[in-house]
Length: 413
Image (cartoon, rainbow, N blue to C red; front, top):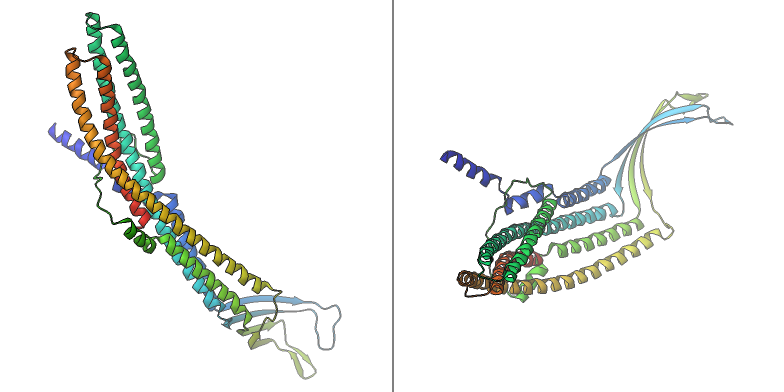
């Protein structure tokens, strides 16, 4: 029997959902994490596409020709097969700049993924603590309902003995029914909180799986000014926008390279249908190998390149404005998160003291009520105060941890 109990305890410990496990599940299964990973991979493949400009191209072709009017040096019908190898020697450094642009885009995508992962972790923490708070709310509401039910039965006996008036009994009954409804609401909120956590970790939580509590203690933080300096250095979103601007600069350089000539090396092999002669002269050989160096220079493209440069410059200006706005938004977020942490610290201390006072007050009031020294209303007020103080203490405990983690996320740690 003892062995069975130990096994059951061990199994329940293994099956309990923890905060660490929730974070792992979110990183493994969340579509947000997968999307950001795919975005990084897309940027890497786009660089591979740009790098292909440094590789030769190989083309095979077939040509069939039939002339309506032939001349002394033309033949009809004819056909040939050809194979050509082309290698770009120079393209105004456009290829080099394009690859620079793609490198910057890869770095930007990686930094954005880092930000998304950090946001996802914070979302898991918030959802997990909400789940815990909802679970503890059920416990406190069940305790209140059980207490009021017992008080109702005791008061009913006293009423039947003619010790107290009926309105005292009805007063407790009303509060008992209110508590019953509050318990139903708490259980409903628990289901919603569980669903929210399942959504974030992208995993269904079994009905019988328990959820483990965790150490929600927090460390001291630096001053607001020090945190702001750290935030401006650490936030990956800021770094990502810098790389986006670098990408736009490189794209402008790539467009500028179009103003320079291009140089291509070409080798071509042709296999004709047959050798053709005019007298003793060979007009068309059976096969032919050709080597060429092709230099071309676009003198006018209809203003396309100039317009592209202006568009990229305007886009870069937009990026700079967005970067400045992001810095302003982050400063505002930091101030709010810092103040929220201060309030949460105070709330935890106050809530702990309030719970201790409410427990002692209810103990004294309940004892005095059993002797008829206090009225029913006083008892009910002490019961309500105890439940509110218990719930407030539970919430304050986890709210401080969430406020602390939110501040760290804003700073970028």
